[in-house]
Amino acid sequence: MLTNPASRKDEFAQRHANIRNDAQIFVQVHNRNCEAVRLLVAQQGASSSRSKLPFNINARDVDGRTVLHWATAQGAVELVAALTKIVGIDFAARDSQVCIDELHGF
View (cartoon, rainbow, N blue to C red):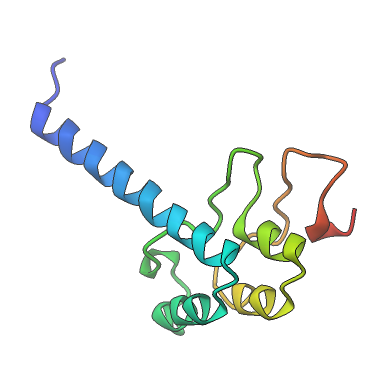
């Protein structure tokens, strides 16, 4: 069955936008921009839905690390506190480095 080239193009554009948005949260955490993370928390509001966020809070880098791993590894307590307020964040996430996992104290 042939697919509509326009729909494939739209799907590709959406995936690309999602990746770009996911990368932005990593940039904000890397830069220790706690205010930006707080704004994202406020943007999500009191909703219990992840769909209000313009990115996947549980996105992973090439090492399988989430933004919560990044913030924890930096020792950024204020940033970790802001991230933990985001509904849907995965506290049980493990990275690909089994022996190095700051999030879980290993």
